Length: 535
Image (cartoon, rainbow, N blue to C red; front, top):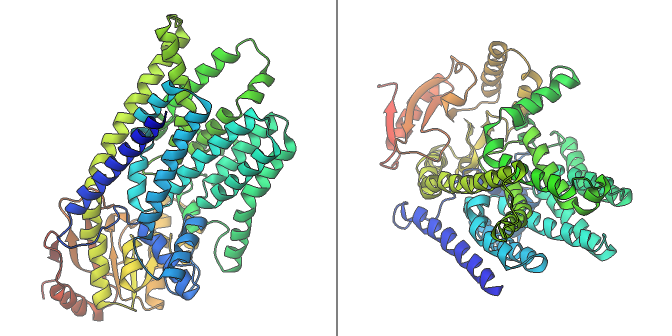
């Protein structure tokens, strides 16, 4: 089966390397590689500020928890502290994590299954999980995927050994690291503990909860003591949990928005869940439910993680891929078993088998869809981030270094420009996040009015000079005191959040200076500049 490992590594190297070189080739000659996702630079900015200034923030002072990963940011910060500032640590870390994920993906099928499962692993790994794309964006998702492969491996190992002490300790170590790589890992901790409780392994379930939630508790207490929230700002800003209504109403809203009407649920999880459900019904029909609880700890864990993630978090862009690679390890043996039985003539034309076949076809359709969906951003993402976010950071670094600036896409700006940044979305600025959370349940017109008044007063009182924002991201009307001076448009943009940013002077005295700076700046020729004020 070693040839399958070689094949997996070769495919991963070819596709990842191919997209890396293709995207880099679209940048100007001699230009360094740019991450195709601006958020990678948020981690770098916080890691740099923490290493050099002791500030867990996108700015060089203060505490603003914009990082979605404790472990990843600490790892980057440690590398910066030891070896110095270098923007390609994320790429190196992700490449290593990508190869480790591929290797342990292979080990799972080598150690527990046969050659036929390995064939499906080779076919489905990259298009279904998008591991190659996660490697190139420079975020923590590749490590998360690697750790989840390890978790699946050791859950399977523990079930086989009836949770032998040595195997369980190894699983607990993995639980610890998963818990601090991303905050969605709370779903995994809760799901694994739930599966253990179903086995009546209550002590082990409580140990999993203790190991999984302890580092999050410690970080939360540090955050509160530093003036932040218990969780990072992004967890609160992006959460789908409704805060109004009674418990049953909230549960209905979660189910309706997270599963019933969530297109991403059907694109990612519906067919794998359907296939798994039919498999369990066929296997355990007429048996004691206790048999299912004892033997299917892995399936119970991963499916539970999927449902919790769909209910409480985002199932698109990149957030779901730790779940997709975990599901793949669960469904490949089911797919392989189905086709073995089909070849042996054991698959009868009944409802269960027809649903299974439909689910397998759906999984292949999902894989093709996800691969083609990621093709375009994987090719042009670096170019688009370079022409917009990096270009904005270059302008601000040249003319406004050390000054106060308002923005709403903060990655490259916070890492490269050296400005003192206010994130109007709230991810990188706790004061803004607090205002949003305190007022988010208000009717839209009232929220927009309060938000506008808050930002107007806050930027004036704290002497912010200019704003560089996507106007479409601003809730309601732009403050009347903000003077639009010029816009930058990237007509061919496909990867950046919007194709137009607008530069605002926040004080009348800043208008002429901003105009002059924009005219003097040697901007990228692909960026179309238009002035709103002609004099």
